[in-house]
Image 1 (cartoon, rainbow, N blue to C red):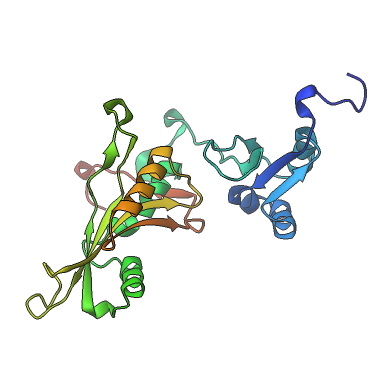
Image 2 (cartoon, rainbow, N blue to C red):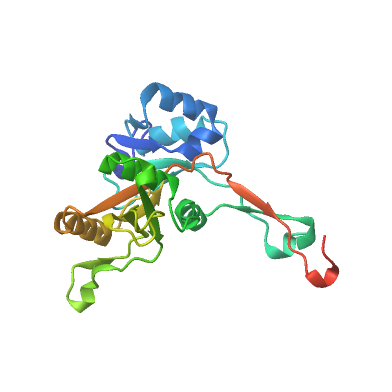
Amino acid sequence: MEPGEEDEGDSGPFSVALKPSACKASQEIAALREESGEIVTYESEREAARILIDNVDCPGLQFQAVAPNDPAEVDAYLVKLRDPEPSPTERGPPEDGWTFNMRAQQVGALAEALFHAYGWNPPPIVDYAAKDLGLDPEEFRVRVNPAPESVGQFEFSGGDGMWIPDFEFVVHRRTDDHPFGYGGPVLKRYIAEVKHGSTNFERNQRTQMTQLAQDGGPDLDVLIIRVNLEGAPQTYDLTIRSVADGLQ
């Protein structure tokens, strides 16, 4: 290859989304995002790698493939890989404490736990319902159903896909017969999907959420709840002890 000549697959503009993990790890990347926005474009992938990875003093930066259902028109994400965890044989005794990286499944579960923690009246839904219905929060109670019915049918059964919502929130009016709202008349039902950060929807979710929102009637609404967990710890510490060794 002659000097200055690019590989055939390396020609053309190359756009990169600067993700929060890269910005947290590198002040230089954070400053670039502040100045130029989340998406930056270079003449080629090689040029982008030289500027964003090779010339930045931050080990672990790398390009990551774009999610197939991401509507953003970019060629790659710039992310920071987490430091690898020790293998089980390299760890010390569990009673001395271990540290683990937060994984995507745990972050997603943490977002849902903000609502699982309540049987009634999760604060975000109470505030949303009050604004949506034009009522004072003291006029109703919200029941949390953490296992709502699925929507749609599996494709192999002849359907157009299935969506399993994360929550159903049922708004009950307080009345003289039901002063605390338990069992009071239902004012509205919210069927909700909880996502953390910019996590995308699966095709089946999009199809069924849209259909249910259209067909559900005035007393039902479909909610998309996005929880920003950027401030959550990236690792967690724990100890494990046997009760047989004594309570401490």
